[in-house]
Image (cartoon, rainbow, N blue to C red; front, side, top):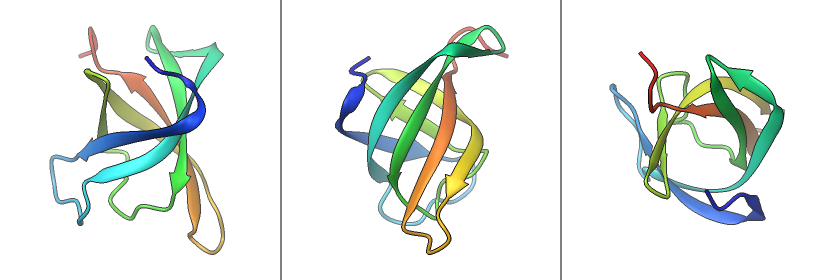
Length: 91
């Protein structure tokens, strides 16, 4: 997974409805010390996107990650940070 401070283009999927666009530019950072349900956690940081909820899945470089937490949304709804874990092997 291309982790780093540079920008990544990811696709957002949701079982319900996502407003256009369904893509999101963000940075990706591994949370090396944090594991959720046996899976490594990642922070995604980018501009605020109204379509991101706890139901959202993120497709990135051939992997699917599930949003586990919306950590921070700035008070002007300009940027946000979410935690996601890889879906593989999870029920």
